Image (cartoon, rainbow, N blue to C red; front, side, top):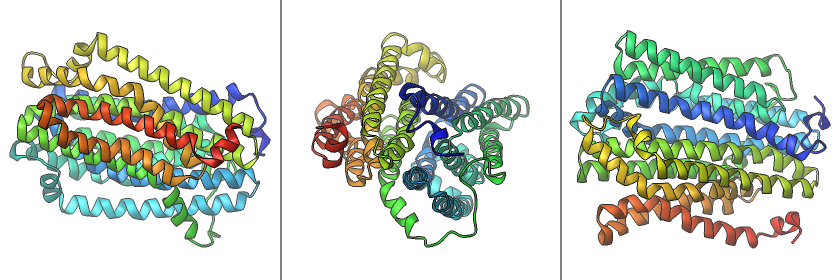
Length: 449
């Protein structure tokens, strides 16, 4: 497949943007729906305590996934640059190295989490009531860490290689399969929370094998090769993609803090309430990440080809997209929060958790107005190979500010301070992002200022 055939540097800007963004969005919606579907079946057919157990384990899963994102996004920038320069052999070498690295990393986490599942669950904040469900869930889900990580990596690589539709098709297939398997394992076979983890893992495996066909048959310009060269490119890719890891790790840390604070202040039902809110934040982040991830190949390839005008228009389109997403989700949580929360929590039998989630939602909905812009800032800085700027945005929105506000705000506002921590952190980060954007030399050059 030749460079111009990708349409990234020569085709219609709108067509190119939506060709990459829309399939990516479908794919990430499908990917995020896996967690939502699990949450639905677990809450309806197991128990709300089991739902809390899933949320207790999520910070660990997020860290493992974050390492994959770090390597993938960092490598995608290099691969996009090499493809833009028509150096396909270098792109293939980097691609092979990242697959090897992710495989080794995932297998390590699988072994550790399976063997020490009880210790890890307790460390993540599970009390005795939650431990009953957390341990079997962690054991089962850890078996499939490799496929979860590879599915994301390969879907990004295949988009960079000019085949975004296959990536989205594979992920969508996995999401549909997950729904079917959850129904079979949880409802019909009564496997409980282990059935949810098994269904999720098998769906990741199926998607991964489907995407691998593209690379094994060399349908594009990326392929596995024995001539991989030196490993320093992986180190650089890790550095350049570190903001994405920090972003995911920050989510894990904040979720961990919220889980523990909720357990201490409100008990198990506090974690149940936060679980529902966390699903909403996860879904909104995934929608915006779909736009942000698409920017990496679009910006990096056009940047390598010196197509600055195209980059300007692509960035404008991305901002409009995430603002629309934010307003849409904000409207949902303004007008029908009860219906959303009732999907996971019964207003009668789970009344304490349901009422707490409603209060939580009334504060958190304002975060949706800023999440997308912050993700665009972070992804754009990564694509322009400005990792420190990207890290600053990622750490601010995902770690430093939320943690500071979680610890400080309750001193003045009580429990309301906990609920306000996330939206306040996102708002302050947006201000920081604009300041960094306006004062970065390479961006000034590209944007014509």
